[in-house]
Image (tube, rainbow, N blue to C red; front, side, top):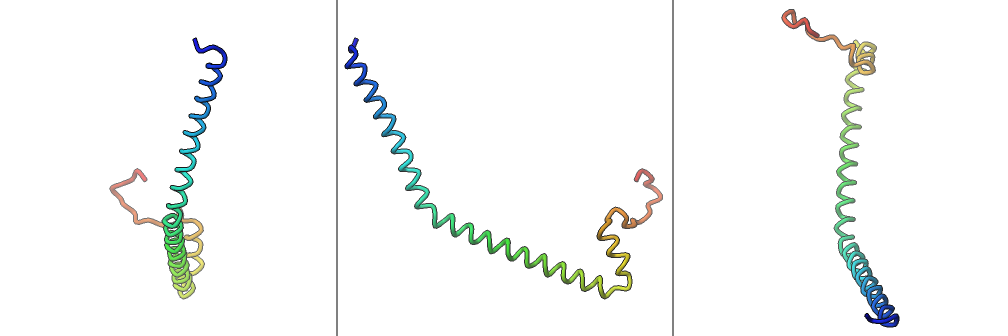
Length: 99
């Protein structure tokens, strides 16, 4: 219908349209990433602070636990139970013999 020259021009125009479409999408994505970068950095810094505070609270908790264990008369038994939590005795329930 268009001949060889017309077909080549249509294919070229279609390729150009696809290239412009992809270029527009990539450009829009780059601009979006660039404008969102400060928010992302702020969020990551806040998450880092929260994780660091959580780690410090666990360290404090473990230090208090270790100090209490060291001050206890049953240090050996408590350390054994920490390593083997399944060995901790439970209260005997005579009406529930299934466990």
